[in-house]
Amino acid sequence: MPYVVPTARADGYVVDAAEWGKNTVDNPIALKALIDAIVAGASTITTTGTSTALALPSGSGNLVIFANNASLLTLQGIAAGTDGQRLVIVSIGAGQVDLADQNASASAANRIINPVAGTISLAAATGNVTLVYDLTAARWRVVAHDQGAYIDYYASSTIVGWSALTSGRRDLRYKLSGKTLSVIFWLEGTSNATSVTFTLPFAMRASYITQSAPAIRFPATSITSGTSASLRASHWLSRL
Image 1 (cartoon, rainbow, N blue to C red):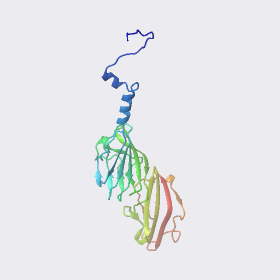
Image 2: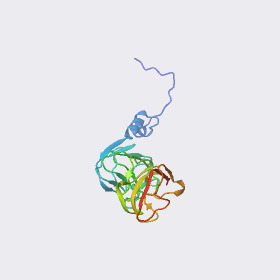
Image 3: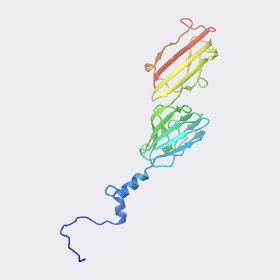
Image 4: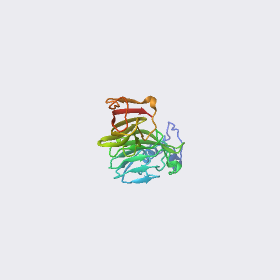
């Protein structure tokens, strides 16, 4: 068949293979390859103790770590991510997960910025936290935190005002949601002071403290040393 000269003109340009791969907007094959390279990743860990550079799951997209630790895991740092990368840590094990705020034991690029000045926790098998990597600050930033169940703080608190507390009637637990701290406490026993105090893991702003019934109560208008004294509240809130 003889060659026929086309009557319509087709405009275009010729590029080599290297240039074709660069123009992802005009090249659906290259664009698909770029999207396929951004993959989510997940892993389940059983790490316990202290970690200054917790390893990330394989993947360049959003990541999930299921923490199946049998005892306490303290995260002082997490291996650096990419700018804007999101990491969710979900507690599924029998051990608590703690995230330390700006801990100096970790390399600068692995450190965590918490929403409060202090360590935040994930209660065993119920808590979760979402972090986003900030390349400018070279830090993981906590953007969402659900502690899960209340955490027992009785053994860690410094409690003043009793010479002895009654077994079965001593309880001190807290739950942090964002910057709101909820506290449940029941302290009953023999008093040895005219005032009582207990410590919590975070500094509280008194102007935001509220409480709900049953309110703080004593057997009389003041505490007398050596008499029975009870301090009880079902729900106590403070803004940090």
